[in-house]
Image (tube, rainbow, N blue to C red; front, side, top):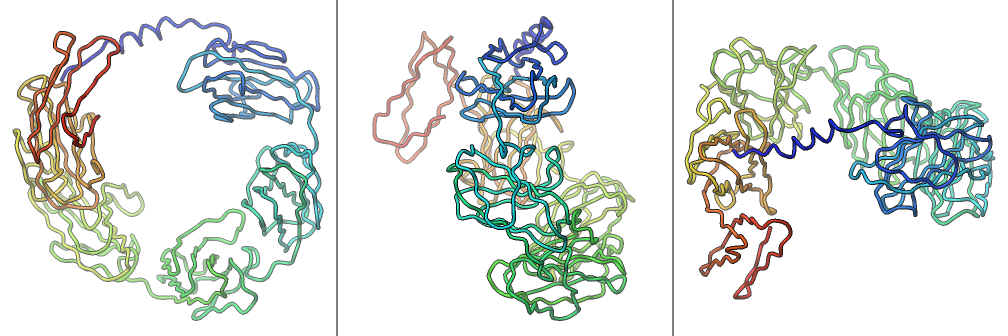
Length: 589
């Protein structure tokens, strides 16, 4: 294959000749005052010392440049990131920092991933008002509050929760976006966000809640804050007690429901079902601030890995305004439902039970062989090596897969993700590795049409002559979903890849710049099929256009398609014109 090293050499010379100037790093940051500044290049560093307390520090390139800029502000070299901005408006950046005091030093890094060009920007101190920042919030009260008319693009409130075992609701009819936080301004934890009406639960007495308003149409509108008792089952900290059998909520209609349940026996699973349109999740532990999800599902769920005596939380999100009714059943685990109770897979036919997940183990009986797994079930299969405590992922596929390079005596774990949770059969066979199974044993081919029986499948093609276009395609040769990868060598670098070419499920690539004798490795595969199919490799001349021979003509017969590959050797810029003799469709790349 032709290789080009000139650009790499030039890059190395450029990097090697770089000289450290003032502003090139944080340690050499340029000391500046307020005003407009000219960054000579990007990235570039500055430092600024606050002259007084009680002002906001605004750093901005907005309106001063058309260059795409990226801004970061730190409290020290290798220190904490105070603010960052990218594409604040039309590619420029802007931040306002409110929490600085007199003599605080900030380090400013101006940069851009796509340009090293310099640009203008400004730094100035601005007046701040209560509500401008989390560190300067306005105190909120129960009842009606009013966003002031002079509020900017956002406004902050702080509310102290007066009691525990209560919920706080914020509501408004204004066009705005609301965020509710807890913790501290430097480490905010979002509790809820959205529009119109938001509620937070499980907040302790005396805890601060920060309320941020995103103001799309300015201020001067009222909003309401309401603290109410929590309805049993409405929050994680006040769950209802779930029981085996039917669980019917008798209170007022809610959108979320919390239950608590303690697993009564070992080697059992929890089976949850409902006819109400809803989404259910099961969380391990009783710490509402640190949820640890076990599993979740739409209307129905089976949870297998709960220990005897362990308490879990069950959370329901109901879509429609209806009361929740659901069923809880505790059933014995079947062999295979847990990795630790994996069933031994046999060569031949095996059966997956009507459960969401089912584990098998299999020991490879022979060297230089492959494991072939097939099934018509609506399920995915995942293969792991080692045992349950240190399983390592190997491969996966929909309905089956082929496992290569497995040594004799090596134990495999196979997990079926049974999408429909219905019983189905699958087949396992151990076969000799054949040409095309892996890149170490590829089919050696020449130009023409080829066919194989199963995927993935490997080929190697030796380019017969230089300056040719190689077209590899399955378009028009199969209805299978195909995926094509071309590599420089076995397990080498990917040259090109193709999936769903021109809105088909097939693949096609056009390759050039090869020398005679170059090898290319071709992999045909797809996650959703193991079927084989036909495909074609063809070799085409590359038409050349130059100043001495600037015209190329091609005649296309009726009912056929025409394709021309061009090698345009004109130096610099030039116009490429085309003329079609009749009104025909044109696809131009």
